[in-house]
Length: 229
Image (tube, rainbow, N blue to C red; front, side):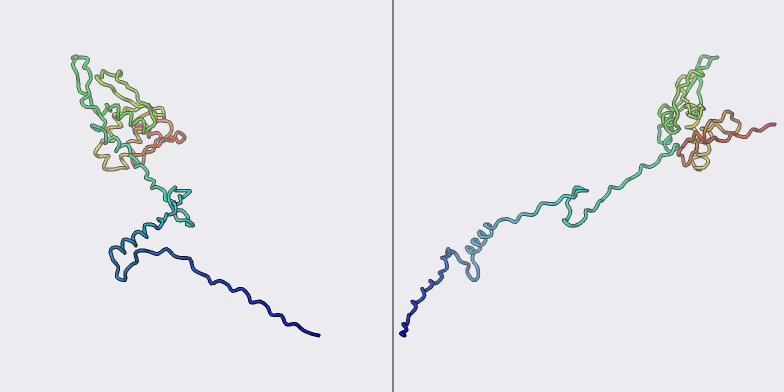
């Protein structure tokens, strides 16, 4: 048996990889730098796209920006309660302490005018302020005597009627102003019409604390004691 020797052809030779040609930079930075090289470097920086900051995320509760992943902090505005103004302080803030100046009446005998006590003549502003505080309504009763000006009264919800000037005069009394307890007692006494010697106590009860007035129609105030001789 005769064997024939076959020789395999040589494998094709792979071409060597040639890197693509790079665009040459005409100006290169020198070792120590130069004005021209610095200008080229600044030009390269300008070609870089500007970084864009991510949009701020609004808080769904406060509407302001907050960091993602962190709970929004709710900051409630401070609530300032308006200062409570008691009746004496409200009256003291009025011009002339809420009283008319130089009220007069007609003298039926001489035909002239006579001076009246200002403590019976509250101004309309003062009478309106009182009515708001005590829950009453203002009425002008100038016709009951020979007045040359209005004389304001207040119809109270307890069924009594008081002279607005009398209540203003109590608020202006310098002796009562120095003692809040006495001032409160005197105001309540006029509103309830239960001072000693008076009749026709009002229905319900007025309570005064530090000049603040409240009315309870379901609690009956005590009638003043009756002294007999």
